[in-house]
Length: 309
Figure 1 (cartoon, one colour):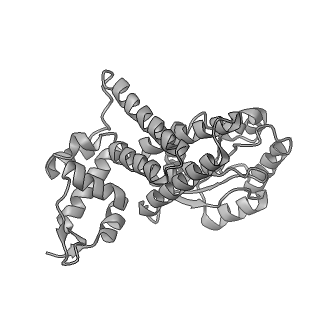
Figure 2: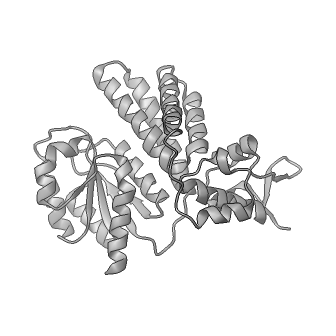
């Protein structure tokens, strides 16, 4: 039977190497062979099993609850709707997510990059892509921003958090595979908006929702946003507005973006500064996200509309 190195397993399952190793060690999800130099070797069956586990966790199941299931049992879970959370379990899960946020924040205060990455890796293993981004990383970075603006965190703390989280997000995004005919999302921030963490979170959340994503970095002029959207045949454009909150030039820039994109292309806008520009967002027909958790539903709505047309 042919066996493969972990890089092949990553590409075929959409999982990061961190997650594969944690699922193997903590949950005995697979038992790979080893080369003479102790490198892991995964069979086709191992990779298929990891892929099934990934599918089921994306549907809302926790890896600890499903790792012991047979392939047939996992297949059955992929054919039904995602499990609805038990109300009695929700407080425990929320507490678990908050625990990761608290411990990650402690690592940041201690300038412990390895400790921070370890917390993110364990949270990723427990919750999967979507919940990690929406319930752990997004609230963590929002809290980091609040504490920094209050003066309770040093600039070195904020820089370490941003660097580690960005590297971790990039690792997840590189491990995600999307179909060549999947809908395409352009993600950026407008001119004058230089904070990119929100845009990065949007990009990996969309990729986890099986969209192709072109992330253009921050501070992109309206005409260049439109150029990238046209060149890629984009199904939508997403903008993150973070800081400054009350930039007087931002409203005009948003109007320019809509004019450059045309009236039909969906424009998704989120971030703290979005609420300061609600009249403009309504005027240009943008979809405003109240929270990152709303992104997947909006992407689903856009894709469903495209499929009907």
